[in-house]
Amino acid sequence: MLSRVSSASVIPLAIRLWIALGAAGWAATVAPMHGAESEAPVDLSLPERLQRELGDPATAGVVWGAWVVRADGSPVFGTNTQHAFIPASNTKLFIGALALDRLGPEARLRTPVHVERPPDADGVLRSDLWVIGQGDPGFGSAPQAGSGASRRLWDQALEPWVARWRSRGLRRVEGDLVLCDATVQVPDYGPGWDEEDRAEAYGAPVSAFVANDNTFKLVAPPIAPGASSVPFHTEPPQASWGVEWQVHPGTNAPHRIRYERRSPGGPVIVQGQIAPGPRGWSVELAVPDAPRAFGDLLKHTLQRRGIAVSGSVRVVHSTNGCPGLAWDHWDSEPLARRLALCLKPSQNLHAQLLLAEVGRRVEPTTPGPGASARRHDLQGLSVLPGFLARIGIAPESVHLEEGSGLCRSNRVTPAATVTLLRSMADGPRSDLWKASLPVGGVDGTLVHRFKTGRAHRNVRAKTGSLRGVHALGGYVSTADGEELVFALYANQAQSDPQARARLDRFVEILASARTRPAHPPSPAPAPR
Image (tube, rainbow, N blue to C red; front, side):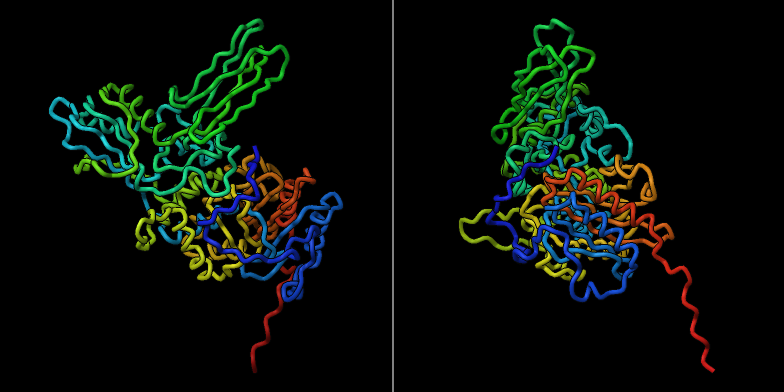
């Protein structure tokens, strides 16, 4: 489902990186290259084929941007290379590169558990058990990297940690489970995220606590003809999901179901009809309250493992009252792994958490009297201009208000995207970076694209999609083995249902091309 983010959303606290380029930058037709770029030598036959793909009369009204270069930076093709485009999830390229640069591939998040005293000889913990959330997205989400592995059972996301507590002798908690989210200062929903997306799995709330990507599964099993009602259940089975089920048996196929969350933290209202027959219905939805959901799942997992909990689940927003004894902790996957978990499936929640993780490492400024603590997502954005300048990207080429790409106020240029991709490919972590991107026809958001042809198992690229917006940026090798770096954008593309397919054909043209000289130049004669 495509995001429905309002283009009018502007957050006053956003870090302003973009300088408006003017109406001329938004010409509705594909413009030829101008200036120094148009005078650079290019393969004449290849640009003609690429231009013909984007210049089809059926694309009238679509704003195209493309920049393709060789590994050494020499141009192959370009149009609207300096125009500012809505990047959708290609935003994640900039956030992922920033995180890798600032944090390093081995960076881990450590989630501590505090108690007043350790369990006694009988395994009884006579204390509240505090979990200090750190924004670790790995609980239950590992298979989402698109590796082909199936998702673990929903209710087993916290099983490894609880199993370790049991192995340490814990048998009963005589106190509350306290979830403290004070360490990660981010809003539940990023700037510019549409309210209509809050029920969707891709719009899951951002939090210091994450289990199953802060989503759950809603399932309606098949019903027989003549059924008087439609049952449903959730995975995992928790009352805190807040589902208002207003679905009735229908008479004709197909199912007709709609759902929405009308207020933050409110229930998901599900309405419609389900047709009788052998097919049921299911959907993945966002949890309403991430810390509460984590705490409820933790209590459920403890009890299933035979560890009784006498108290309740409490969510607190301050470490005041936290016991001093660090009894246990859980270390996340290294950033190298978490980066793939973000970029391959284009995980919006993970991207916002990566941005916040960068922000937590930024030296905070001292707030004035009465000022609230700075948001970690904004602190992360505050160091982006310096990173961009260091790799040769002008600050006016990039404007980001959040890290996922759901915000339609984000802007980047094709030239800036390619410069970023070249910098990462030329850096010491090139292999790691490329391995984090989806592979055509193999995994992530490209698993169903490039299933055949020269780009199959060849192209590595980040996708992006909003309503009327398509993006693709990455690397592809030509038929004669030369790697090309590319960034492709289509904005205002509602009128062309083939816009995304055109981007794919564009890449297939690159993969099928022969860009190396047929006959290498003869070496100069040796001096006499």
